[in-house]
Image (cartoon, rainbow, N blue to C red; front, side, top):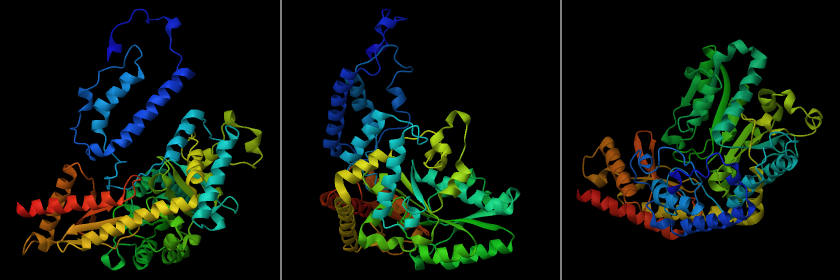
Length: 503
């Protein structure tokens, strides 16, 4: 990094100051960057999917302080190639089957360029009218694609907002539910409010409840069982609510999930809503991972009962090819949200807001500043169209079915829970390791199997616990993944299993 050398001619000399937005340099460096990223994707399969660097590796590679003088983009990208890429876990690798899909697309990427290029801060309508109005339009578009009730659309009495992540969507809706309830019973009773979910629900709900002031002891993680395919049982919810009422507590909020993070379990919306509504409980549906696939008519039934809920969210940045971040949240009563989140400082006052004829999205979220995410989603929807987006998702479901068939075809393995959408949860059965192998030992051996699979660098998968069973998750949904990658992933699993059995 030659720029760290002392350069007296640059010191305190404004005549030599670089223009941060020189348009000719912008064009030149932009072309270089696009080529660099395209080359990265072209060569992505050459890299181990899971980074194998040691903690603290990067501090040893980079200087202790920022450069005093400017560096060329070519020099910086050499360091990206040399030092950064080795420390990346390659989420866009076609051999990435871990966690959840974070699908991208050319349109999503170009949308990000427009977001950064315009760099508007659209907290209110007047701060950038197109940003606000396009967001309202694309949220209605996507809501229509999902066949959401009109009560969730701006064209009805509801509306949608693009948040950063599900964590933000959950916090906003819990706060809205909290304030709506406390306005009826008194704010001093916040300590009695109770939040409900299954033990498969994402941990972000518990965090959101804590931030919203819900007492930690009033968070109910209701145990699920194999008999319901680890979905939340309406009977178990009813029992939990009844007991809390007997104990003088106040049921507040239920989070049902369409496609839980661990195993893609699906909670039954209709029966759960029937119980929740008897007690005035706000029902939110978290469909972060799998909800996008419900634009496919054959998968829409997973949302049956959605007309009874209060709010619904999904992450377009997971399975709708809209680069991170883009969490879509719909509510059927926007005023519940805005009553909790609105602030009106004088320096933001304007005639449009005072007219009550416009949406000010600052009042639909935690933060004030916000990115123009809508233009990215707009590009994706327009560039591919509903038909192609459906077919992309269908191809992933088809690949998941192929992987499931491969697992079932090897007697040493089993599919532990029913496959929903494009995730397969499997393990080596205890008998494969030898007679008398108990559940705990089998879980440790499956954990070893997963560790060795990931250490190969050829494939990356993660795990979940289902009851007391350790399962390996194969989550399909990366844009570049093809059938050949799924077949190869299974070969790696089988070869690794052979190695373990020989130990």
